[in-house]
Image (tube, rainbow, N blue to C red; front, side, top):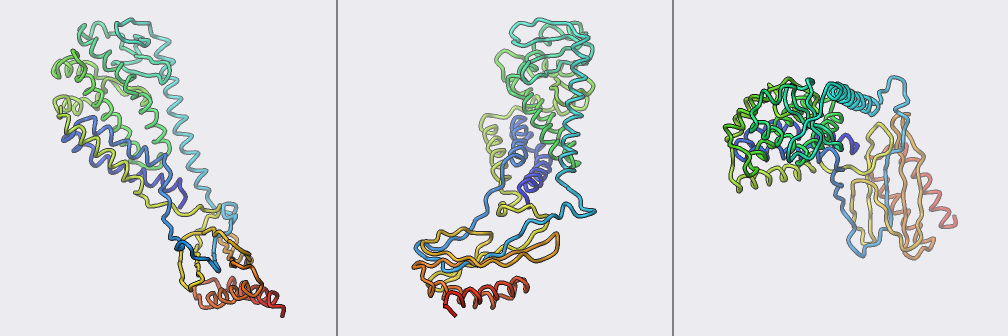
Length: 398
């Protein structure tokens, strides 16, 4: 399995797991711990799989011969009727990103065209009042911006205006806009998974609840009751997911419930520890990576068998490069199989002294072991046997 497929499968499994546990985690450890859980699928999506563990020959042992069966690149993708799944996945991801960017650009263009600037003390970013939004919202990865509804000054009391602006400003300070952009890119990678679209909404609710806790933790901000009134007055219709809104209608109940769910510092630390544990465990969720694959669409057997000078055998998964202190002789079979599935094999002899007699003796041992191997492709075995016998005869001067 390719590293890309491993990451996509692992991230999809972690998305499902986070969706299953985020509510109890929020209830027992707080909103910020639930928000931190989303780091696990994000990390699984971008990090390479763990390398496969391989055995090794004991130090000091000399490898006399090595038999390797490995795949040969095949042009399966070019066969009639074959589907290039990588191209399909890339097209779906590109379409998802294009739709999100277009929605954001059109929305922001309309909002700024109908807006007017607004000044607020202590908020170090541009603020625009516009009829394009029903409630306060933050946007802008580089150029920080806060959008306010047209009736902002009439709908909210001065205290509620201060708290609403603080919430949006904290979205910028906490990096939530960057996290939201990363979530959209992750969703683009997992566009084929129906749970992705459920996860986007859940991620957004967890992000807003975590920001609520940051507002309430700010010295002199407000108490949960008055902050809840601000949230109620901020209820708005959905906006593009690239923006962070104070609240939307579908988030009201959960947000209000979480306002009074303030956990102590020990529980919060435990919750973050749980999120980190999930992220670390997620790295191995889909299993270790296989050895580097060729461009073939089929999976073929890989085996390395090493016999040292003491007659001990070691079998490894995957190809292995051996350091040869003397003469190295290679006998390779011609590729065999169908157009979309081919195999090749080679025998490598490493001789300490490098004399022809020693090399020939190693080849004879390799030939004997190979002929006992019932798992080998018969065509490959026959080809290798003929070439080995010819090489042995040449080395012995027969």
